[in-house]
Length: 373
Image (cartoon, rainbow, N blue to C red; front, side, top):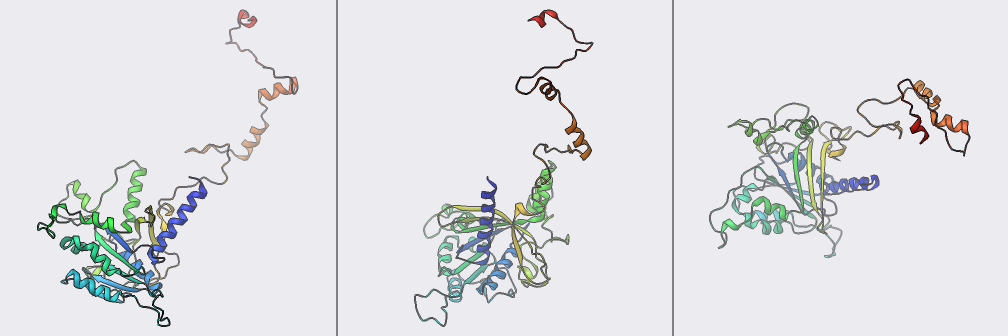
């Protein structure tokens, strides 16, 4: 790919990811975040809420696993113990569009955006997976409403035994396949620390290390070890949520955010999918307890960036693993050497051809017959 085309593609991917995080231009009505025990979706959901607050959007937090209300959330809805219909009606009432008070024109589009964030979809996929399409359509009334939901990808999904509205439950699609089919954007989060260690192992031609559930292949049973580490602390993580059981710790507080890798798959209206890998890192000059994370391409991260050739390397010098450069004295000596074909051209004269100058050695066997031929 040409450098200009590659730079354009990288800039376009970053702009698209920034639009998705900032809820601009209705980039994605339904965004599904897939996380695992190795890396929680908490840093990414906090970044969604931070940017929504900066855009003055209404934040509706739907809780299945979170105990405390996040500090930046405007509405906190407890979903445990409620039927799907009652939950949808409650969320829809909070997400109802509001028109600017200065405008009485009914054709005027709503002025405030809304962000609905569901901390986990696993309880819904275990009980009523066939009702998820209708549920999503009910709680997303207008294009100004965006739904971001988390799904724990490594939680096993049980197959319901009773029939669903007269149809065999065995023919129902897998919950994960259903969610990825409905979503307009899919974000898969993984640990940056794990990605760096895997890259270092690959560069040394070593087997990639494994963490979490996959470590059981090494014979460790009955306990989960080697989970994600908090950046710069070396402490083990706490599973899917933060403290208080479900990641309900204060957003924008003194707790340091993690740096995570995000694999984005975004479906455009044309049907084309945009796939790119990003990393969310702490911005430069960020004060403790303030600001958010900065998005950058994973290929631009210092641990993954490919070293570019030095500007001083000439075109006539080869790129090798050892130094082939010359000192200034060696370069002058090389330029002063007169090669044999140049000497022949000077003696004979320009335009009259060349002459081969050869001095026989003691080891040479002169054959007069071959010379005459």
